[in-house]
Length: 405
Ligand SMILES: Cc1cc2nc3c(=O)[nH]c(=O)nc-3n(C[C@H](O)[C@H](O)[C@H](O)COP(=O)(O)OP(=O)(O)OC[C@H]3O[C@@H](n4cnc5c(N)ncnc54)[C@H](O)[C@@H]3O)c2cc1C
Image 1 (cartoon, rainbow, N blue to C red):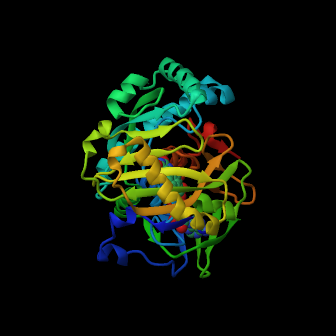
Image 2: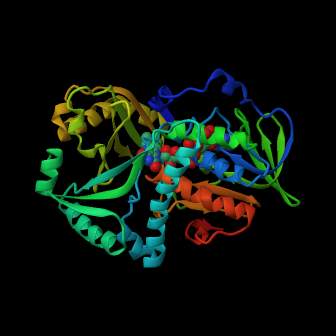
Image 3: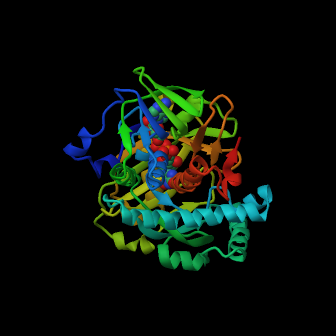
């Protein structure tokens, strides 16, 4: 599946040194280990980070080079508020499960901050707040309710009126929530940093090694790669991103297409962006914006229901202009902004609104990690942490929220 196309921003911010490149090669001999992780996106890298701390023998495989999937397209907004509001989660799953899920999102952002201090590549993690504005009257009513529910349950949130929004941002929206506990990150640097951390603790990595089949064997599982090598392991974590759906269809998953741009570095009035916060809105699909450490602006959204790569590629040039127009509508002072980088990609969600850990009868001892949704990175962290315990000790207190067998 071609998941990404266009001119990506993050790979321009970091490249592996010559020495590090040499350490990644295809699987060229059969192997034996405790755990195999399939996928070197942020989900697989976070699993590698946690599992490498256990002393187990871990191997990670990717069919491409490191972090060339959705992770390289990810715009790096880390928010505890989900695409599905806390109020909607409470209506769907009850208060206990819904609030626990939101708390886990807050904890994940804190965990990512701690993690970013332990890895050798600085992933440009910066704590941020998020402005979540009402796109219309319906959005305003939803935000009023959501403010109350978030407050009641102890989450970090302020309510901005029209005049407060005007004063701080100089654009007109009737209502917004201003949530704390959020952050921005460079997901590409983060993935590489996590892998280097895990490699220092014994992780073996094989790139250009596509897993083509997985079979159950006594006390474990056997994986076969395209070049006919195999690995025996006790357990497998399949963190193949949206491409996992090629291996196993999943009725709770949804796929669409999304678009994003990064501008050239902005010289004029960059400071006018209040607290360099993350910005998004109540409309679905939503527009979202953030700044970068090198004074650029990232804008994303304008999702389309198609899953055909050629179709989204054909829309990309038009969408990049539309995203610039949306930026200038909000911030007229950036009217010289140009899309220096622009890309499009598959985007996965779930009908339930929750990310998933799945086990299927035909893949014994194999866990599928599906961090699908707008909070993909936060979800990857939550699921990777739970999976570390599931594969090593067989249980985790929060597994029931995400695990379906
Ligand atoms: C434009 C865009 C913007 C986004 N913005 C955000 C954002 O701001 N915040 C956020 O939290 N999330 C965001 N997301 C979502 C986020 O990108 C994903 O949730 C996340 O990166 C998924 O990581 P992953 O590791 O699960 O998947 P991927 O990064 O896709 O990694 C999967 C890996 O598995 C490998 N693989 C697949 N199948 C096989 C196989 N059979 N054998 C071997 N290897 C295999 C692939 O090569 C790939 O490297 C965005 C997504 C897009 C497209």
